Amino acid sequence: MKVFTWLFLYFIATESFADVDYNAMLSEIRSKPEYVLLLPEAQKGDPVAQKKIGDIYYEGDGTFAFPAQALYWYEKAGMQGNLTAQILAGDCYYSGTGVHKNYFLAKKWYEKAAEQGNVRAQISLGDLYSTGGYFFPKNKLKAKKWYSKACESGSFVGCNLKKSIQDK
Image 1: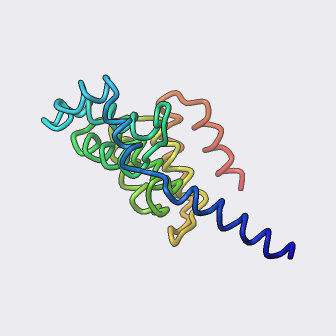
Image 2: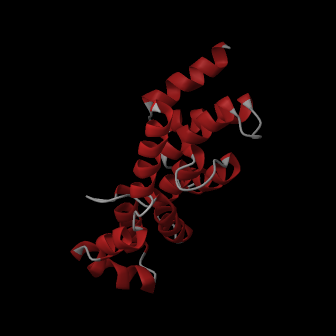
């Protein structure tokens, strides 16, 4: 009898959560004043507005987050050269936030920002090559290259990571 009771309670609990209305949650995000003001500019192609729309979806800001939508907007802004959006798109692919982990796409986005001199992206690329994983090959020489670039830009972290690669 106890098994039946637990199964019944489990069924009731799972059914009550099955009615989560994601459209209502999206509507809640889309009714936020900041979103309403930024969306027309983002749709016109403003990379700053696109990145901010991505942030709204990523953070949820009082409601559920929608990281896949955030990534969509980060990529749109990143394609237009927005450094922060490029790094955030790389982070999404690296961590699997909103998508399946894909180190090759993370590399693509990090490289866009790193080639523009962004230290954070240079260190992220170094980390990616240093650790490898998810079919992405380790490459200590490339890791050292990106850590060196970060070090040359004045990054203490980049210098320490470069030194740690040399010590191994």
